[in-house]
Image 1 (cartoon, rainbow, N blue to C red):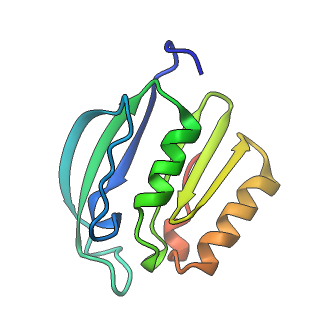
Image 2 (cartoon, rainbow, N blue to C red; image 1 turned 90 degrees about the vertical axis):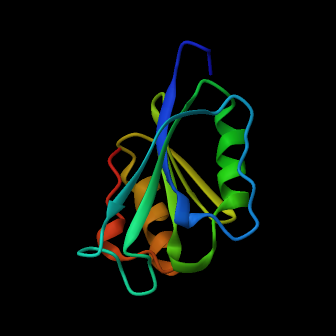
Length: 127
């Protein structure tokens, strides 16, 4: 990916596993905010979430692997972001990358999310 393509996304602070250090090269912090999501959080999830907005023009695969290594496996947490014509969805230990509009690729990621406990209403990422 060329340096002219900036990738942006969000990480929910509470989705990191205890002891995880998430520090991929080239990642820049854009904003940190706390949001009360008590009306839509699922059982076991915190009611207030910390959104960490980031950007990078670095290595997409390396970034995805760093997320996969840092996310907690409980509760089906994930991170998703666009990378050119691709959409990347990352769960603990598992990365999905598919072309935008690829319904089969999206369905595979959604099915995996269901299998690891992601609440149905949170499987709503935009391609």
